[in-house]
Image 1: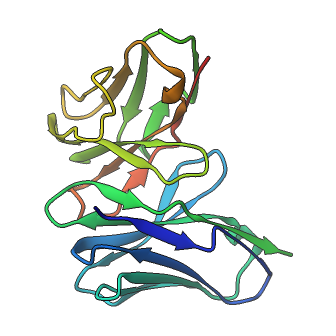
Image 2: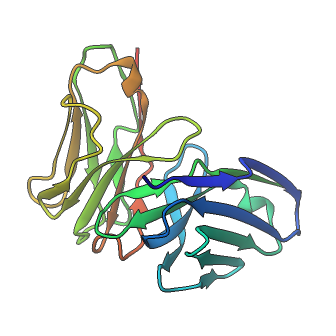
Length: 112
Length: 114
């Protein structure tokens, strides 16, 4: 059974720092991996989607990497801003099914 | 529409009541998903539709949960005889096609069962 873990559960850093969020999964037979952002009281916003054949995806100040063989993904945020404060979740989809398996998220606080 | 719309935004139900939660996906999106999210946790898959066909309902926690999408657009998640453990945020998401594309989520319905 696929399990997704995100460490740390919470992270607080000063504005301007670069930071890395971690996601690990137990079954390497994934179809793709997505990183989402969730703001309080709001739905989830997809940030980056990495197909299983890809190693990384970039969008603006965000870069997500995928190492399928080791069951790990990282989300790198450059030059963090207070507006980046949110909970970040990663989710993996398995081959041949439609379910996303989610981590519990990392709550990120960027201090001005 | 501009995004995925869910209603109501909040629902308070007495234990034993039936509730119906509505999801209006992005126009033209073939795939529609329902997820359940408990406080402080990641979402849990409930069910998946491709157009009007319910292809996967393995995540529905009991036979009190029922979902439909009769015309391949709007979907309704119905919970019969609600229990306290049903209290959660119910999220709807849609995509152009299956798991190949990014999912677009609604803001969710927060259900509280008293």
